[in-house]
Each structure stands twice: as C-alpha cells, then as structure tokens.
Length: 266
Image (cartoon, rainbow, N blue to C red; front, top):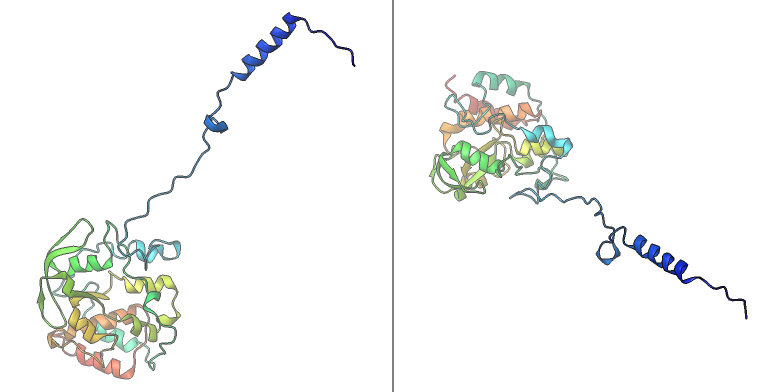
C-alpha cells in the first residue's frame, strides 16, 4: 500500500469553508439557465387587413410610391359637375384621343386578375373599395372596420339610385383585362397595382353591380352606358386613363370614343 499523508484538521476545515463561499457568490437561474435573459426579437402583430390575401404587402418597396399616397386627397369630391376625379375637358380629351396609338386587340395570353393587386390598403383600415364608396356616395357612414353601412349612391351608367352599399360595385373604367390587351401585359407588378387602385385619375367609379357586370371587360365600341347622358363623362374618362397609362386603342374603339366626346356641350 502507498504511504498515507495526514492532513491537519484545521487545514481541512479552512479548505471546506472557502469552497462553500465560492459556490454562493453568484445565483444560478432556475433549471441551470443563464441568469441574464438573452435578447429576443418581439414579433409585431400583423396589420388589420380585410384584403390581406391578394394584398398582404401593400407597402413593399417596389410599389411604395404609387401605393403609399395614390391621391393626396383621396376623399375629396370631383369638381365641375363630374363624378370622377382627374377629368379633363372635352377639348383636351379630343387632343389626347388623337395622340393615342392605334393597334389591333392584343392577346389575353398570361392574363390573370391576380396580376393586378386590388384592393390595396389606403390607411385607417380602409381599402380602395371603401374609399371610392365614400367618395362617390352621399351621407356615407362606416363601421369600425371602414365598411360602408349606410349612405346613398347614384350610378352614372344607368342612373339608378341605391341605398345599399352591397349592391354597388367599384368599376375599373378601363377594365383590367382591357388594360392587359392594350399594353399592361408588359408592365411590372407595381404599375399594375397602381392602375388597379388609382384614386387620382378617373379609373375607379362606384356603379350598380348590374351595370358593371353588363359592361364586363368590353371597350366602348362593344359596350356603352345605357344612360346616354353619361357618355360625355365616360368618353373623357376612358380617354384620360388610356392616355395617362400609354395604352393603345383600336380603330372601332377610337371611333366610338369620338362619338361619345361629341355629346359633350363643349
């Protein structure tokens, strides 16, 4: 057996006392974890968005400019007796119509409404549809989610008076499909989104669902508002939108637009 070395009792007691003091100098977290919590990233709650599926990122960088402030005063009423914003005079519309490029009807290959993101968020829980309903109506009241719950509207296309917002559609003056076959097929997603949610130009209008669905995606040579008193505004609005976005027209379309502009008083 090896030689045993004796340790004096006083020395052994001192060693044990020192070890106990070192063990109590820092309190351990329960479960042996780090006593100082690590920095964690708090997830932000998603923004309330009634149109979240088609427009989950309305303010993405490529589209921030055309969508963040599509109209400095989106709730302002159009002036001069017009029901649409951004209208030009008949004389200006004739000049713009003459300058539009005439081309055959384009292909619908690759078209999808989903490629024109709508309705975009416009702030305060309101999407584009609700903004147009308030703008085009009278005495419109909204609920906490910005949905129109009362008000009255007069549809430009057929002259019908409506007091139920559910019976109103928001029409794209130049339909999305018509935009596609006259130039929008070559646009990027940001420009298509701006086109589909344009509150500055005469592109969006609250009309009866019946008249909007009768129109479908047809151009003026194939469909005209049944109320002929609206033709002047319709012709000016259609021409303005096509001119603003650099879209083409067909010969029959241009001829009918000329007829509509000829109904204007000046």
